[in-house]
Length: 221
Image 1 (cartoon, rainbow, N blue to C red):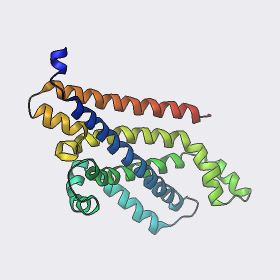
Image 2: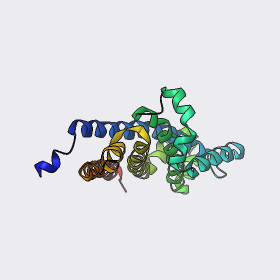
Image 3: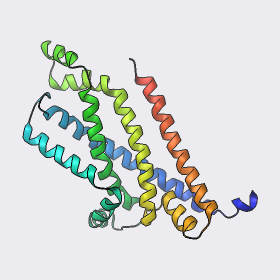
């Protein structure tokens, strides 16, 4: 066992874990904020929303569908000029952030819209009948009712982002994906590859566990 573990550069492994966590949680935070705002607008402007607007809804709906349809690996290459402009390089953990955010924000926007749309219409109509403003309906009715679904969506997106970081790592973004490919698969060091995969799974299980715990705490149904 010690002979197998000696094949691993633990400093490089620790750095790769840190890079994966950095890419996952920074992109998750920004994508949730952007996706949440976009999802609210999509919900409000839809045909039976609080403030219907066909033009705005169709434009945003098209953008969300378009970005969700582009495979992540292709999106990375499409965004290379933007990445270099924003970050100054196309390599490293920071360089992966634009593609990670742009690929996941539309996904969360769609999940937000679905979660809000599942809130009981009768509750919304009753709130309107009592003279409650649209802002109050959003903050006092929609968000509390949709909170478990919104948090579950964040969990799903976080797990997806871990997979995306591994994919980005294969083309130089760093993290466990880069370590598994460059120092594991490419050099036929299966110990490094399987160890990196193990830590990817640990991160996924931690995200899932935290998400499930929070959902149980906030779900009062």
